[in-house]
Amino acid sequence: MEEWPEPHQAFGPWELIDAYLHEHRNQTPRGTAEFREAVTALDACGLLTASPSWNHDALIRQATAPPLDGLPPYGYTGSALDAAPVSLAYCLSLVNNRTGRVGEALDRLKAARKHLPLHLPDMTAEARSLQCSAYDRHTLLDRSSGIMGIPAFRSLTIRDLLEHAHSDGGTLSQSVHHLSRFTAIGAPPLPGDFTGPDAETLADFEPDRFDLAAFDPGLLGPGTLGPLELVLVAGRFGWTLKRTYDRYAPFRCLGLNVEVGEPTRHEAEMTPTWYDVVILSEQLTGRTPALSGAVTADHIALCSEETDLSEAEVRERLRRYATLFQLQPEEGQKAS
Image (cartoon, rainbow, N blue to C red; front, side, top):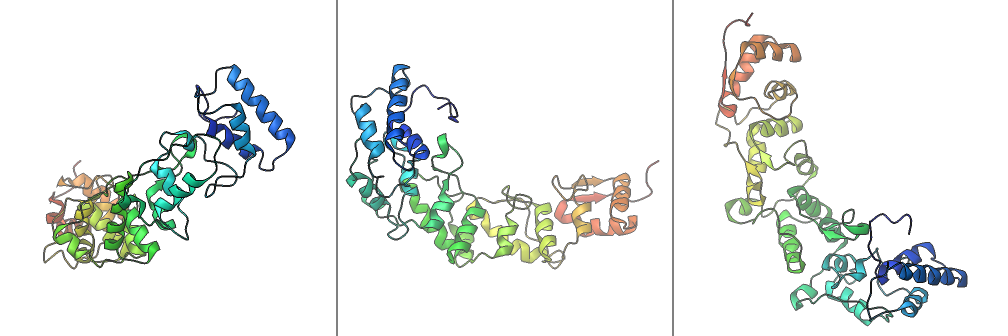
């Protein structure tokens, strides 16, 4: 208990069982006796949650009984079973890969022989019938947050949806519609409504490794497609601006904030290079903020030094992107 990672006012019964089973995976009389002594000491210090539904003897019987069917054989994930009711996210984490239905995980817990109180959540027939694969649980649940690492639902990003579809070998549309059903058991809504013309465009979208990379944190991951992000992604993949825009602008229906218009006829076939990425970022880092408005002669000189392009070449590149970035490059000599 001295090494318990969370501050406590009192311990619940299942939490104590979890601690005992992590320490004593192999049952021994000595281990049971030590557990009984620890429980008595905690009770004397007022560190056990008070309830008429269980006592010391019930704790000992549970500690020495076979593990509940469907739960990890070495413990119960901290205080997960002490919640009233047990969280739906935790129930989802217990779904058997062979059967895959949420209701069956609840039924196993309900039917198991228990010596301690266990409050299972109510669930509609629709929710009970949900099929949940390992890919679904990996996508929907965050096992690193919450008290004692108890699984909790997490908010999904576009990249999460793409990874799910890619791992599952299906389309983005299939993943969106399947994962959206889990809102019936408390999962957060998806990042967008996936309706309208953009959703129709993405109906048969099958993500590949480029799409996963496109939504990395340094590119479209933060949720914005602006002129610099368009150039960054196109430059990273060696694609034209039009190809990049046509592939990712439809993700508006999943919450992507598209701040750039469709490339013009003159811009459409442009394929950015690393030179463009550098000179079109305000701090010459290839990262936001993007360059915009008036571009001074001093800034052009810095671009030249950073890229080894001549100032005339820098100005020419800036003119090519002037409409997309709303630039007004200064002409003339570097200011003294």
